[in-house]
Image 1 (cartoon, helix red, strand yellow):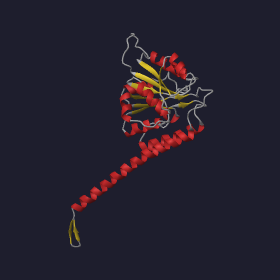
Image 2 (cartoon, rainbow, N blue to C red; image 1 turned 180 degrees about the horizontal axis):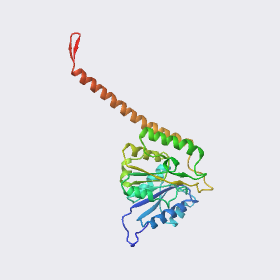
Image 3 (tube, rainbow, N blue to C red; image 1 turned 90 degrees about the vertical axis):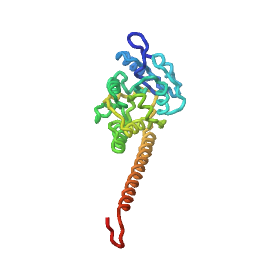
Image 4 (cartoon, one colour; image 1 turned 135 degrees about the vertical axis):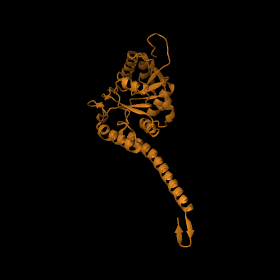
Length: 275
């Protein structure tokens, strides 16, 4: 917990939520940076590590460097984040991964846009949105195929006004988060948030960030390229098909209504039609 400079506790403005599953190599670095940033900005905030069942000492090392750890038993990236957010106390929240690929010392753009009224502020790692991917920081398929493809679909199908739907560093207000009613428990949680926010006509901001190489050595990434891509596509198709169905029904009702009005205003006399 971070206390204001006068030493008196105050309402927590910002919670930084970090999902974690066996990240002992890197989670302490993420927490230290987040705590340092909060202190340097004199923010009343907290760092919450949402632990999803670590057995490698991640919990202990997180607590030692200033995090409040909450244990989330339901497995999955989305479950860990939903659980961590539920236990956080901030008016605003920033979420980011525990692999040290995001710089928690560079969060100014997120809190600034949240304070001026953005419901959701999305980080962008891709150059098309002003971001930067350091050498070796993103797998080839993710950078040149998966991420651009799904970001393109999100922009075309759902009007998403951002360029990097998969970026895990993002901020949002607690009140807005509660309106989203998020359901996805896996990696598609990230795109569900973006798509629903866009469909709700939320005020969405974008902040260019730098993605650094994963700091883990002994542990592999939790990402599964084809599995996660397939689940994202299924989510897009599910939401998209519902929208198309609603649009189709609306057009059908509109057409039938117009036909009935035209029919009711038409007088038939023998074989002659007088309108």
